[in-house]
Figure 1 (cartoon, rainbow, N blue to C red):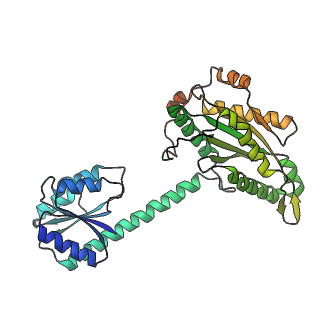
Figure 2 (cartoon, rainbow, N blue to C red; figure 1 turned 90 degrees about the vertical axis):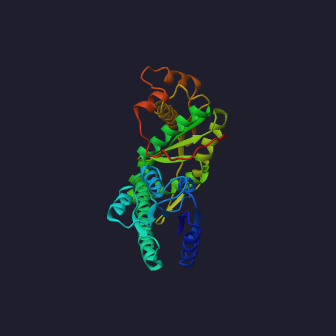
Length: 340
C-alpha cells in the first residue's frame, strides 16, 4: 500500500522512509506541506499519509482540513506526526481531521502498529465501496438476461442524447422484438421462453460495439442505444441485429426452437429537437410496421414520421427533459466521440 510521508526534518524523513519500506509500504516522500497537498489531490493519491504538524508551505493541520473537506475522493487515513504531546494539542489535531497521531521522536513499533490499524480501515473501506458498486450494478441489471433493466437503459438514453446534443453527434435507437414469443411460451413452456430471451441477449451483444448499450425494455422487447450511428448506417446496423438471430435455432432440452427478430430503428443526425420519449416512440412505431409487414424484418422511422413526432407540442427537447429529470444513475459513463 502506498504511503505519503511529509516531514521537513531530513533525518526524520529518512528514518520514516527506511522503516516504511522495510515494512513493505510503497513510500512517497516530500518535505513541504503544499507538496503533500498536491499529491493528495491526484487521482492515485496514497490512501495513507504520515504528516508532520509543522512544515513550510502548509502545515499538517491545514492539509488535514483540506483533505476532510473533499467529498468526491477516496478516504485518506491521516497519521499526524508531532512533538506536541499535550492533550489540547492532540485534540486540536484530531478535530482538524487526523485519524491518529504519533509523538516525536517516534517509536518504530508504535508507528507500525498505528499504520497497521490505518491500513485495515482503508482496506475495509475499499471492500465496502466494492460491495456498493456490486449492489449498484445488480440494481441496474435485468435479473434474467443481465442486460441493463428498463429504468437504466432509459437513463442511458437520456445521457447519450445529452452527449449527442453537446458534441453535435448523431444517435440511433432500436427497438427489437422476438417474433412469436407468446407462441414459443405456449408451445414449449416458460423455461424455454426464458432460454430464448437469454440466448437473444447473448447474440445481440455479439453485434454491439463496446460503446453501444442494450437493455431489456420489457417482456420480449430489447432497446438498443447506438451513439454515433447516422441515418445512412441505421439500416445496416439494424440488419446486423436481425441477421444475428435468423437461421440459428436455439437448443432447449430436446427441442430446436426457430426464432427471428423484428427491428424498428430511428437515427438522427440532429437531436436538438428530440426527447428520449420521442425517440422511443419512433423506434416503437417502426417496430410495429416491421411486425405488420410480416415480422423477421427491419423498419426505419421515415422522415415524415420523425417530422410528425417532433412537431408534437408535448414532446420536450433533450435540454428541457434533462431539467425535468435531474440526477442520472449512470453519471460516470465515459465521454465518447464516435461515429459509424
